Length: 215
Ligand code: ADP
Ligand code: 5GP
Image 1 (cartoon, helix red, strand yellow):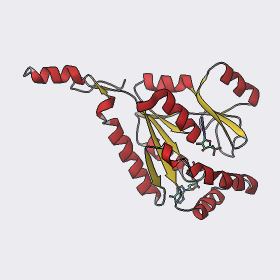
Image 2: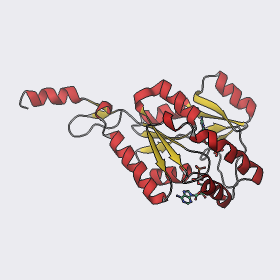
Image 3: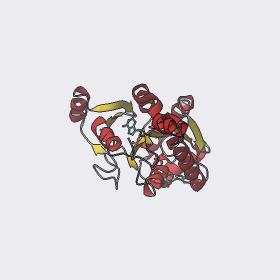
Image 4: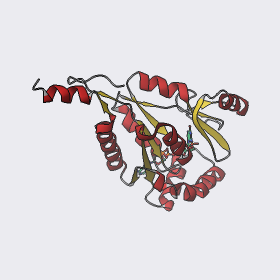
């Protein structure tokens, strides 16, 4: 529950999911959201994929080997997990629970399989946003410009992108990341509105009772 406001309302935390084909701009959007919002914290996934240049263990991902990942699956440590490309990715459960318990919302950069599993578990607390690239040509250009992947990896990501975009109907919101600032502004608007949803507010009954009795 997030902190009580002056009227005695509390709010259930939001599990805010951003998905897109790799290279469409999720990380860029996520960074911008987190920068100005102390009430939002990133869920750091575990992955068996090797770190890219510049990626920091524990910050971008928890980089683990296959054996450790399998142990975590067996121990029920993941809220959800999936095969993506030739690697495995999963959301550590304890971290998400700790963020929610501290009164903050959680931001997830996970694929459609993760969004689907999270929705099965947490239903109405989950808000799912899918980000499209303006075109496949531009997606390819962004992956090349990012300069973090080999040509083979870029080709594999492009091959997967066509499948990824076909899962748009499993999302609550879809956006095109054309102008990045405009896209970030739209994602902020979605989060702000979702935080205000009546279904997330608790303590309303007591407040309305007082109103009805003229207090
Ligand atoms: P993802 O997290 O979805 O894989 P990134 O956020 O890493 O994607 O973005 C891929 C590349 O595209 C990065 O180099 C990023 O700076 C760039 N980028 C992101 N959004 C835009 C945009 N709207 N226009 C142009 N380049 C962008
Ligand atoms: P990347 O290798 O580019 O960091 O991520 C590849 C894909 O895996 C992206 O679509 C990203 O959203 C997804 N991903 C990252 N972490 C998780 C996770 O914990 N669970 C699931 N299901 N997907 C993830």
